[in-house]
Length: 165
Image (tube, rainbow, N blue to C red; front, side, top):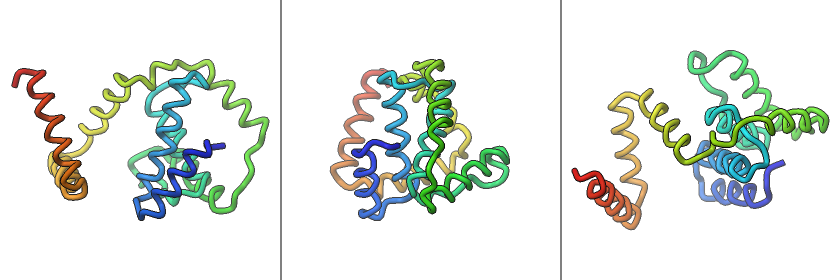
């Protein structure tokens, strides 16, 4: 069951008209926190993200299943099943939930470190073309607002200064 605070943040995002992926990001953030605080572990950063997305779908976030060719058939089937569960408020089996949590307790916790998440972000970004990355950056600058752009510029300047470029 997701934390009450997470559900409140998701509801706020939905009221503001934010996308399903933004809403789902709150669940991913919650999972990362669970791993960092020792509630359970994850075999990889990708698994931690997948758990968060699954929780989001089950909680009723209208996050579509991945397209064919991007993930395995079993992942797509699981995503569709999670979506259906979220629509019909299906109850999870307590025994299965306990077993899943017990299995995750044996997994490492370093997968949710800042370093691991940064490495995962770099790998994910490399899968996108230069044009897609550029389009994402342009959209970010449009939607960020003046204060956000100013903060991003200051951060970029700090990074350049630190790297000596």
